[in-house]
Length: 285
Image (tube, one colour):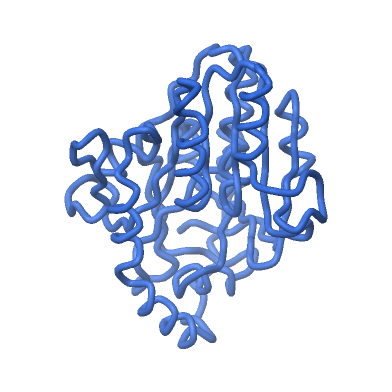
């Protein structure tokens, strides 16, 4: 039983949850993820590990409410438990002293880069973090990312907070001005990650992106999360989730992600309530 210890809405439709999962917290590494089933009948949904505390035995997730399963979760409250939480899954990022590391993040990706920023900073890198949102009220984790970055830049599409534009616009301007970036990591919607690769490719900056195809079992058995990278078929769950942005077949990724879009929209409308919450387990202090 994986109890929700803390849960709060950190931006509209974006929720932070701290769950009791000591086995996962002990082994978690930057770039990995978990798969959650909210109840025994829920679908299996991957969520990036944003933070973890091996001593407390907790993991932190940032969940954006977009479909039926995420709505089921956000309707729960602190003290409730989810049925299953499997992880850590995926290949951990290679943490090294690259020099200057740029992190571009949007939507759920703002939370997803927190652990990466902390690890890269601890490895001796200069960390530039650029977060984007449509408007100021959708930004979150400002203080947390400022504490783990040498420079935090905020961008908004409407210009209401920080620089007007996208996170990749900042990356592009810095590269054009002659600033050296030794490695870039982008986490967010597929379009933003593709743009990050397009911006850095002419400068020869290796850029890693966290691909988010439809995923089922998370162990490489089903093949649902297959992607094409460098003209080779890869599974995002066991070969990723991070891949070289310059090698990804983005058209294929979009087509596969859109396969069940209409069904997801209709499913959300039917999810006004969830099954009774699972019993609250007693956790020894």
